[in-house]
Length: 165
Length: 137
Image (cartoon, rainbow over all chains, first blue to last red; front, side):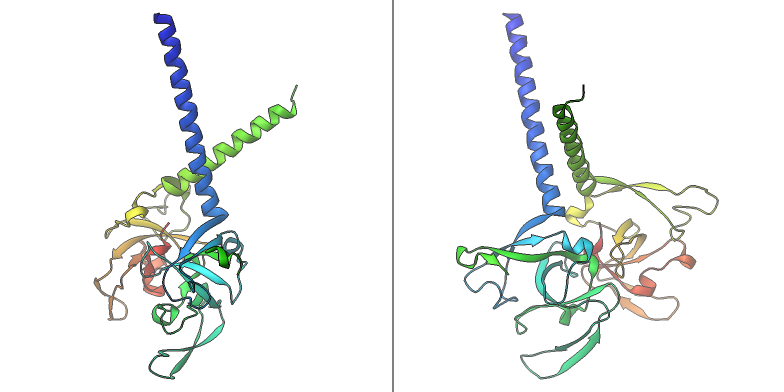
């Protein structure tokens, strides 16, 4: 009886450690994939109209490899960490890389005033497609390249929009 | 003796160890080597021959609970491939007197003012302005 009990316990312990190891591996794999390869993100707000969120919030795939190899170009839709709030990411369109000359409307709702800047070294100029309702480089200036999170390349939700950008 | 099965097992083990250590170094703590003398004498004092290795904890990144005097590692604002180590001097909302230009700056939200301990040989917020909290890692 005692022997059988101890065998049973051993079996349970082995089983439990195997299971927790599998769970640990799963979460580590998830973390590495999301950090270094591919992530899923939803895009809140109206700042990227009409590219995103015409029929409800879009869910997109984010390529996290390209920024690491500087494989991004003007015109890409990128996700960057907000320079004003480290807990938030924002989705914008890349309009200039370092040394580019960017001309933008300062306040399109109220005036035609435009301004031209040269993007400093190691920085990016990002703007929302909906220039009337977007908080972007026009407000907080160029963002450091280190804040680049990833490049949006595929819409996966809603079903109707499924496909490459 | 060494069958394909055996090598498959070794490869799987290496992969597991790899992803677990990557996760730990991203989420919990990692070891970094300090080069340069901008943080002397805290790190790399002039009399030492070897570069300092430090333990960096990453739990604080969850809530961004930093305070003045903390030593932080962050991505350089002008070159994302470089990481800098400096000390936090001022936090958002603080007013700071600049000694060399007699200017007063207000630290904007989500930023902090960083300086090296060795003021003479450090390129920091005094030349490039406040650093965004999002660059900390």
